[in-house]
Length: 328
Ligand SMILES: [Zn+2]
Image (cartoon, rainbow, N blue to C red; front, side, top):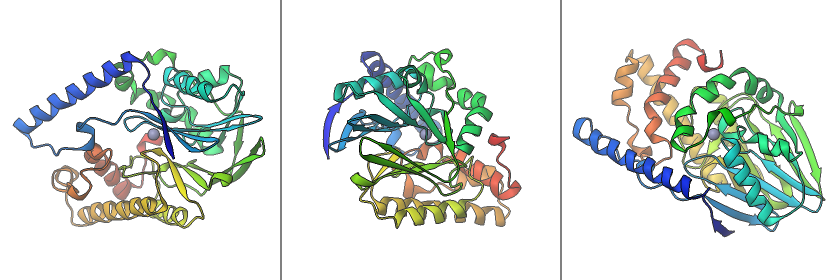
């Protein structure tokens, strides 16, 4: 694997990123004066976005502080997995593809309903791509569109992105459990194993590259959002199944290129987090006390550790009510 280039979306993005880090620094300092905040990966400088070449025809766009994307280049055209969080970074992804090939962008797969994986769809639509998603993803993309926008507005503003530019682009083709896309002698095999992090989460095997794209269910050393899962047990089982698949490299929706051992590590973390929170509920601990006392210091260097309080609250909701209010 070689690092092709270190990319940014231009000076504006760099400026905004610097400002963000500066503000985070201030928050950390203020936090230290009032309530000690653990140093997290987010509070250190996030690594710059990179385009990594995985094989001669497969590319992984990795953005630690955002979301990842994958594209496969063939003689007949390009297949893209996920389009980033907004039409402008979506267009920046197209610009990266255009530096590698002038072949048409034929297919776009949206791996799950979170806006940071499909809000960049519009410029790909304009480029003539056919969009594919699992049927539940298609449904949820419409159903929670307003909530997905609402939870990203501040992020858009911090990055100088206009929320009004986001247009919902729904799939042209949906599938239930399996679908194979053939393009230029290559294959992408789309697989749905049921809900882990959420319904509709789509895994995509690229057999010739012995690579597997993983959706929201897995991110390398990344603490996942717990607001959508109907069953952490199913999620852990699903990850154990994925970790046993015959592939050499994992290309996650968040976090860097990973191995099957990293998938096992996340399964163990989820099982640990879930068991710990379940135990607190069983002991009658209030959710506010759980947020204060369950600090999981062993994961302090993981991506999104700073969101832990919200994840504990989301697990309390699941354990105590069985509900996923975000999906209402
Ligand atoms: Zn995401």
